[in-house]
Amino acid sequence: MTHDARALIETYYAAFNRADWHAMLDCLTGDVVHDPNQGTREYGREAFRAFLARMDRCYEERLHDIVVLAAGDGTRAAAEYVVHGRYKATDEGLPPARDQRYMLPGGAFFDLRDGRIARVTNYYNLHDWLRQVGA
Image (cartoon, rainbow, N blue to C red):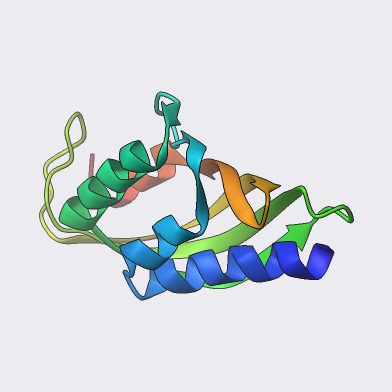
């Protein structure tokens, strides 16, 4: 079970690094719960699709040094990584985008159900990101 859980998260992040949003969405349950960093909890695959569209419009990111850990029963997992990104369009409520580059550690926690991701909780240091983009 641990192997399957790790493989699911690795598949999810491989899709992220290819900007293959359809493949990412295929990793999620229909009722997925998403906790974006510093944001309001969102519910469902369609809300996640809208989140990915906003991310695609505003950011270009790749994750490096991904480490995935999974519970023995395969119901939960966590990942740590380093985000290498470019802020390409101004995101609502954030400083103006001027093609700034950034690099910062991040992480995520997952609930898994029936071979899919049922919850994604993302974390990164917003203050560090703001400093890097010149806020």
